[in-house]
Length: 84
Length: 467
Image 1 (cartoon, each protein chain N blue to C red):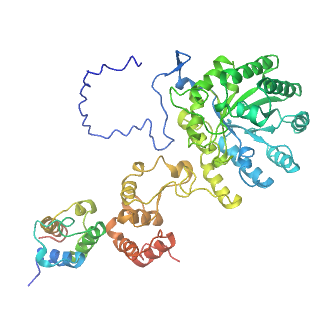
Image 2 (cartoon, chains in turn orange, cyan):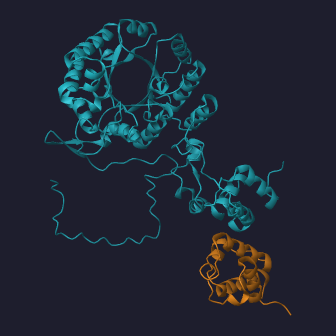
Image 3 (cartoon, chains in turn purple, red):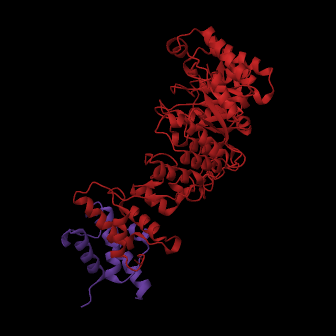
């Protein structure tokens, strides 16, 4: 069964930020709640691009604050770049 | 009492926010393609002897203000002597920096040794009109002969003014000092040489009790001579005591000193010059202030080399000049970088890395947030287009404070990628991670360019220059 976007985003967050999957909620903020440092925010974006084979606008991607927003943002990128 | 101050009970009038659609970048002042303009609004008012005296700075800078050089005199007193070759090379660069209209109008030479005279001959053989070469002597009969034999039209001579010098150093009284100085100035004129009287320690002198009477004597003496022989007056702030602050008292007040010289002693502004020292970190602004209050000449030394703390940095004075005039007037600011490189590589001088306009790192930023600003628009964190005007584009040096913003700026600069071709932060994250790990492991030094180039080769091989 194909992995959902949310599962893929969670997998990347766990790997890059080294947090437990159960600590991640839709409203979790990458910096304030999950402890992402500046460089890790960029590493997250790079890992999302690799995981979903997409490219993201740097400023827009780095402006995403929460896990839930990231899922929405990445879903839109996938749709725009690979179709529904 | 300031009559224009509002009554203390008056509430300030509200100023509504002007929520503009386009940024106001004040490009008439900060054009980026030139040195920022120095503009004035109205007159400067200074209370002198109980009267309000006005100065018009805009009119002052529209006059024939200029820079004079003491690299080979005061500058050489502060360091091991230059070789003849070095003097000739520096003179040639000074000439190009100041340009054909003489922004750098004169430079002064010692004349005492065979080497001094050889250097003079080498420079004159270049055939440059500017900077004109003048002499500097202790001033006795033999010295005047040296000036004459060298074919110079003008020489500086010591006329120390403070009682520290007159009483404590020369063991004279004021009458003896003044008579000696006037006699020597007259002798210079007799020899067909324009005397430039260096009023040593003038910011610690009794201005009304000695300086003005002496300079009035000089002016009277000069009135009997043709213009090219009339005495010039150099105000020497020997210990760096000069102050620009409005309301400051004599003898330290620069505005009042200039006013005394022009209005009380009768010195024409064209024959009035300032020579400062940096003992209180005021050397550059003190010099520029003299232009604003009416003196035409500011004396400086390349990179500020001069006795103790140094003189006004000549290259800084030229940049100030361009900012005041709003035009280069023929000065070629790119030569400043050439001169600094020459000092570092050929003269072996130490130039502090953070020294304005010439230090190896004066356009280098380390803070990531500044690097991010530079990447978005160079104008945010570069004083002007230093790449075009000085051949010194902004750069970033990578430390633990640089972050991904610093790394991406460095990488794009290194690879020459601009605009749409420039890489973004996402593309360089592996290099940024390598940098972060270096400091996490305890590194305390900056990352070198060679190390970063190697990381580009490893992580961005498709962009890396081919070996």
